[in-house]
Amino acid sequence: MKSYKEFMLTALTWVLVLGFFFPVFWMFLNGFKPESKASTVDPVFFFTPVLDGYRAAMDRGMFAYLGNSMIAAVGSTLIVILLAFPAAYSLSVRRIKKVDDAMFFFISTRFMPIAAAVLPLYMILKSIGGLDNIYLLTLIYASINLPIAIWMMRSFLLEVPGEVIEACRLDGAGFLREMTRIVLPLVLPGLSAAALICFIFAWNEYFLALLLTSSDSKTAPPFLGSFVDGRGQFLAVLSAAATIAALPVIVAGWVAQKQLVRGLSMGAVK
Image (cartoon, rainbow, N blue to C red; front, side, top):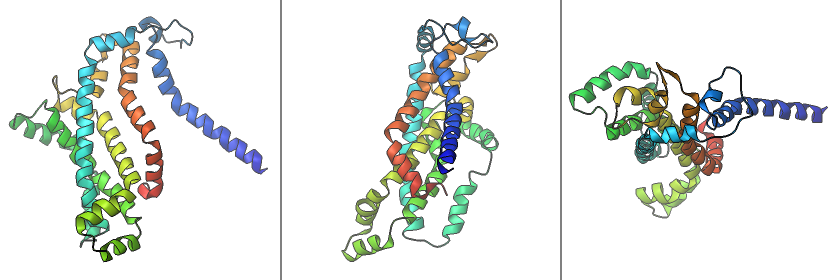
């Protein structure tokens, strides 16, 4: 009976995995189809692969948009991690006063729909001449992801045994040495998980990038949306461009998968 339940559970898991993976597989497949076969109502599984979709995406300057996405995602992630770790450290190891109030304030910034903040952001950036600026967009992404990173990092830091910190203090370690040489190596998996999630959020962000950038600083997500316009849907080119845009996230997730699993298992998602 036990083996039967395990078999059914495994089969159900694989059905769910294949169900979630199929849209990605179909996108990858459409990228190699001629536009006439990718846009048909009836699904086409057998065809002669072509690279027309990838050539069309590159001809429209996709590398520039990918570069902007990379600047915004990597830059905002670095800023977030540099600020989130000491902030979370003070909220967990050092235990400042009113910790719960501070944590609630951080997470409350995520309660407001991002649409409610777009108009003020747009007016501020317009008044200072900051529209279509990739570096200001990077700072906005960092401010949006910072509360989540602080919450995640605090969960990881609370898992650090207090005896370890007490021992290093008895050995005469100062504040910086305690934070960077003792505690930081213990929470590196959690740090990697927080960084990867912030990177994915910034890389995939569409709404702010669409409204606050226009040409020079446009990122990859709004660029993908440009393939659906009044003339129709160019599914083959869109699928090819989406496959290229998804590669950095897939590669980052594959490289950091061990740290991500370890980090999340340390208590990031509770």
